[in-house]
Image 1 (cartoon, protein in one colour):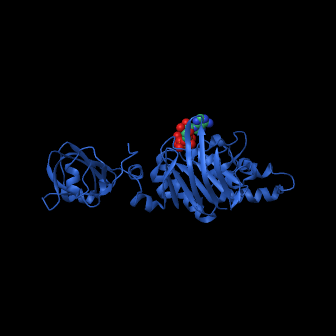
Image 2 (cartoon, helix red, strand yellow):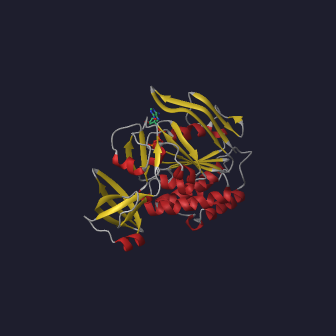
Image 3 (cartoon, helix red, strand yellow):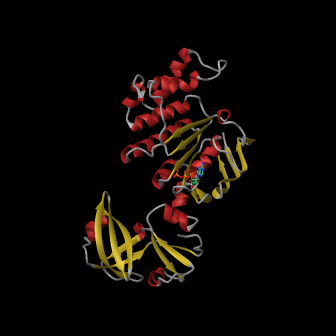
Length: 345
Ligand code: ATP
C-alpha cells in the first residue's frame, strides 16, 4: 500500500509540530523519518497511524482518503521503543493475540493460528522461545517478538517508532541489519522513526530528514549523505568542520577568513588529507590530539585559532606516524559551500 501525505500541519497550542508536510511513500519501501528530538517524527507517524489527527492536510492510503479513518481500519502494524508485550502471556500467545481478537467471521481456526504463529516465530528466528514469558527474554528478543506480533495480522503498513532505541549498541546494530533482511523478504510499506543517522542510512530505502516540523531533504541514504541539500542536513548526517566566511573562492581563502558572513563552508573530517610536506593549497597546522578509535584514527589539528577534526585510516597513520605537537600540512579533498546560512545554528 502506498502512502501520500499532503499538506499535513499540526500544532499543539501555539507550538508548530508539523508545518505543511508533503511526502509520498511508495508501496514496499522502507522509509526512515530522521531528525533531532522534538522535530515532529513521532507526531507524523501517529498521524499516519490515525492515533493523532492533523489540523490541516490529508493522508491517502493507495490513493484513497484515509485522513479520518479509525486506526483499527487502517491495516497498520506498530512496534514502539518500549513495546509492552503482555507479561502474563507466553511468547506464542503474545504473537497469537491479534488473530484471537479478530471478529468471529475473520478469526482463523486454532490450527491455522498455530501454523501462522510458528511461521512468524521462524521468521524472527525465535521459534525456540515460544513457551517463555516476556520477562525471560532479552531486550532484543522482545523487540523481535513485538515485530512478529505486529506482523501477525498481515498489516499493509508497518510503523516503527525507535524500535531499537532502548537496546545497547551491539544489539541495535544486529537488529537493524536483521530488520533490513526481513523487509527485503516481506516488502511491507514501512516507516521507521529514528534520531540516529547511522541507523537511518543503513536501514532505509529512503530517508526523510526533518527539522523543526519541516522536511529538509528527501533522498536515498547516499543522496542525503553525499549531496546534502541544506547546512542542517550536512551537519546532522555526520561530523563536520564548519568555516564561516564571506569568501566563495578557494578553500584556503575560506579557512583564512573567519568573519561572520553570508556563506558557510563544510568539510567532513575524512575529507581532509594530512601531509608531511608543504604543497599547493595546503595549510600548516599543529597536531593537538591523536585518538585511535576502532578502525580509524581521529586527529585534532590547530590552524590559527581554529581546531579542525580529521579522520584517517589506521594504515595512513602507520605511514604518517603523527604525534602531538608536530607541524603538518593539510588540505581537503572536498568542500561544500552554502550561500544561505539563514536558520543555521
Ligand atoms: P523525540 O525523538 O524526542 O520523540 P520527535 O521528533 O518524535 O521527538 P514529536 O514527539 O513528534 O517529536 O514531538 C514534536 C513536538 O511536539 C515536541 O516539541 C513535543 O513536545 C510536542 N508535542 C508532541 N505531542 C504533544 C502533545 N500531545 N501536547 C503538546 N505538545 C506535544
